[in-house]
Length: 171
Image 1: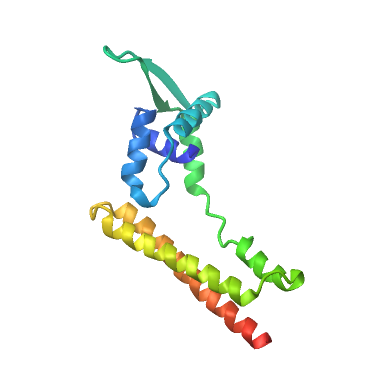
Image 2: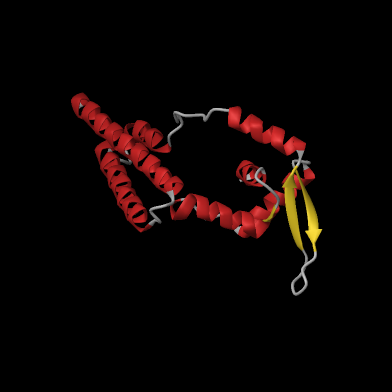
């Protein structure tokens, strides 16, 4: 949550609830909605580390609100984040560990594990399809997020098929 908040503050000062709304609007309903408490805790930590600065702003009929802005150090951290690449592909996969260890324990059948995981992926794809249909057509970012998740799921389904074929050949 730290770096997405820094990215939102790069365009200008904002308070915590405004940042929450901006994330929700940008990412749509497919992305887990951020907890406002988590956002304020993260903002406090970012302020302590000098990546942002907060300023209390008086409001006439409400308590003061704190508006945050990015510091030079925060801008540098954000630039470094944009330069980093993601750590994919995932090699540590919990499902694969179950699949590999099942014969040694005698507690699970590999094909049953594959079928159960396949059903889970298909259910998730159906849920994402419903989300995509319900999502605002103008929110291209949200649609790209959903599409990416569905493409990953399709690749996982293809991989499950490959695992099943290999295991059936082994007998």
